[in-house]
Image 1: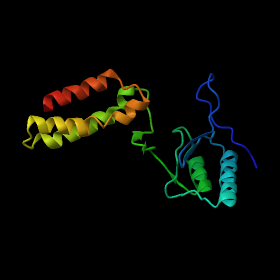
Image 2: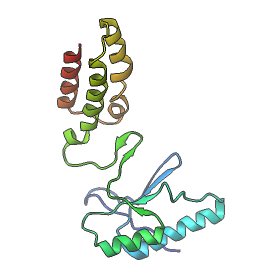
Image 3: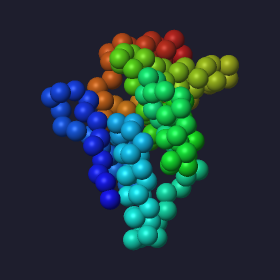
Image 4: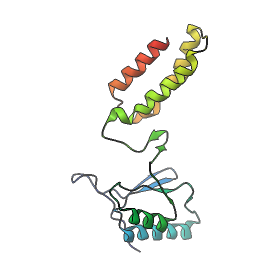
Length: 166
């Protein structure tokens, strides 16, 4: 059975081949068919040893934009999973990060705006608004803030939106 080389994010960091969280796994490969076959063999060995199978309906393959289309299709066929265009969200936080933190956390602004805009049309007392803000709006960024330092521009935008709602 082969091994997994993984990827190196920069020359100063260690090689990253996998991440595990609860019952989820993310594998990082260099995109060579042989390494994908090695991972497929490892997953099959795991199934034979434990009886636990990968749910291929909930699994997907995300590749670098520079990866040739033919190789992308071969890799997806090897794993018998769909090729993903976007990574989506994991634990409520977008998985595909760009270079801009403001863009990364724009979803927080979007969710706050949509919550407050839905309530804007309704006649709500000041006390009711306070309850809605404390129990619904303040919870939106809570998990993200426990992991990341949210840019102050995002926090200020949320504060401005709440002030206009108030």
